[in-house]
Image (spheres, rainbow, N blue to C red):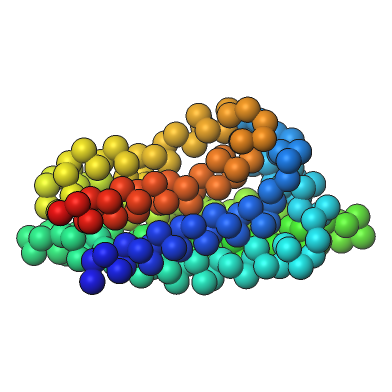
Length: 215
């Protein structure tokens, strides 16, 4: 069972990453840097998305809930791979992570509005949406942040089947590199930085899958 839920988690991460690229990938890259404010970053994304075909933007948004479901299945690996002494903590990590990604899937779905309302005639509606978008990620980051922190505790304490060094490849630790990947050269930055919140899970699940298959 463990290998199947890990594969589901990997599929969810890859699918959500594909959704990111459908929503705002462009060879022109984002018009912001690591020092830009949250509002400036959202405006830069709007400037990209409003030039994309509406069907592409809608497809990217619709991927969010489907990916979130696969992510939740994948998060159950935290419970499956943890010994009985720490099952309660593992369940808590699972639930917090699910709470975060469900919000993230909704955020992803609603992100399509940024492109669909990008025209000047929708300026007032877009302003309200942008305000909403500056607050919604707080729930996502809080849920996944707690879940991933508990996952780190489980790995480092040796109560999972994973070696302790997997701590370095856990999503919570990889997320800390976000500022660094935001400084990547133009072209690669929009792929890596734009999809980093999902790429960290791709890296983690691939590592877990390799370890399981090697046992």
